[in-house]
Amino acid sequence: MVTNYSSSYFYNTKYDIDFILEQLRINLTDPIGNNRTDYSKKNMVNFETEDIGGEAAFFGRILRVEFTWRNPQNNVQSLVLKLPTVSRATSFMSGPLKLNDAEAEAKCSANMVYLEFAHMNEISFYRTFKEIRDKLLIPRFYFGFPYVKSDNEGIIAMEDMRPTTVVIQPLPGFKLPYLKSLAIYVARLQHYCAFSGASINQFRKDNEKESICYIQMATHMSKTFVNECRTDLKPFFDKLQHLFTLDNYYNCVFDKPKFGSSAVVCHGDFWSNNILWKKGPNGEPTPEIGSVVDWQTTHLGNYCEDLMRALTLHVSGEERLRITDEILRIYHSTLTELNNGIEPFTFQNVKQAYKAALPSVTLFMGFGVSMYYYMPSVCPDEAMKEELISRYKILLLEVIEEYHL
Image 1: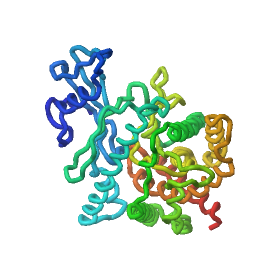
Image 2 (image 1 turned 135 degrees about the horizontal axis):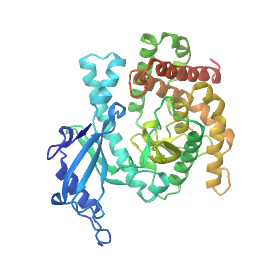
Image 3 (image 1 turned 120 degrees about the vertical axis):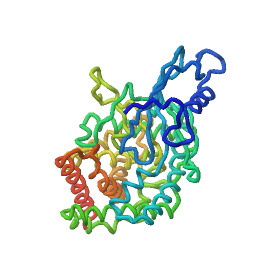
Image 4 (image 1 turned 60 degrees about the horizontal axis):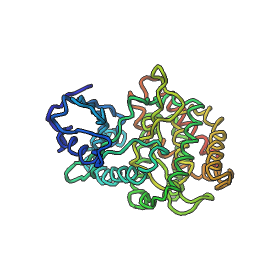
C-alpha cells in the first residue's frame, strides 16, 4: 500500500517529513562540497511511503520512503525508516499465551523495556561497524534516535536495499547454494567484527533477569501451542523441555571463551526476512547475499547459533540433517582461510558448540513456530503449516537423540 503523507506524522509518532529532511541535511550533506545535495523542502516535489514490513516486522513498522526531487543531484532517492513499536509483538504473544487484558498490559510494558535496549543495540551496531559495512553487507546508516518507552518514540533511517535485493520466503526456504553463501557470510561476519578494531563488549547480554523472563515466556508459548494446537508433538516436547534452562541459554549467549574460541558477534535473528539476496536479471533471488538487516538482537556468543537458526527454519528436516555437516565445514574452512590458513578452533569444537546450542535454538524455534503457524505470510496454506511442523518435530527428535533422552 502506497500512502502520500504530505505533511502528516508517520504512524502517530512525532516524526514528519520536515524532521526527516532536516536529519538528512545534518547527516548526509558533504561539508567539502564534492557531492552536492539539497534536502530542502522546496527541492522536494513529493514523497510516497509504503509499509514493507507487514506482520513479519515484530517490533516495529518498516516504511520505505521514496522521494521525487526537483534537482536530484546526489540526494538519496529512497530510504527505509524503522519505527519501533510493541503493539504487533504484544498482539502476537497474547494469543498463544492466552493473556487476559491485565496480563497483556504487563507483557506490553515488558516488551517496551526490552525494545528500549534492542533498538539502541541496533543503532550501536550500525555506528560501531560503519567503516566495514561493505564487508558486513549492512545498509548505510543515515541517522537514529533511541526508543523511549515513556514517549513511545524512536527511529532508524537507513539505506533502501529493495531496488537491488529480494527476500526468500521461509517456507519452502533456502536451497543448498544459498545455505553455502550463508555459511561463508557468518564466517566473514565473525572474522571482520573481531578484527575491526572496534569494541564489541557493548554487545554483551548479561541481564539474568531478562534472560530468565525470555526463557519462561518462550517455554510457555511453545508448551501452550503443543498442548492446545499440536498434541502430536507433546510426547517429544515433554521429553526435552527440562533442557530449556538458563545454563543452556548461556551456551548461546556468553562473553567469555567457550568451545575453543572467544565469544563472537552473532546476529541473533538470522531468518529469511532479515537476509536480502541480490536480484537476478528477472528479479529472481541469486545465491549472493546483498544485505543483512535488523540487528536488534545482536550479541556475543556461540559461533554456530546463527547458522543453526537459519537451518532449522528454512530447510526441510530431512535435508537439514543430511547437509548440516557440510554447511558447518564450509563455515569452518572459510574462517580458517580468513585467518591466514590457521584453524581458529577445531572442527571437533564446532560439533561441540553445535550440540551445546541445540536446546536454546530449539526453544527459539518453538517460540517462533507458535506464531509462524498463524501467520499467512509464513504459512499461507495447510501444506505449509504441516511442513513447518515437520521441521520442528525433526528438530525435537534430534535433540532427544543427541541428549539421549
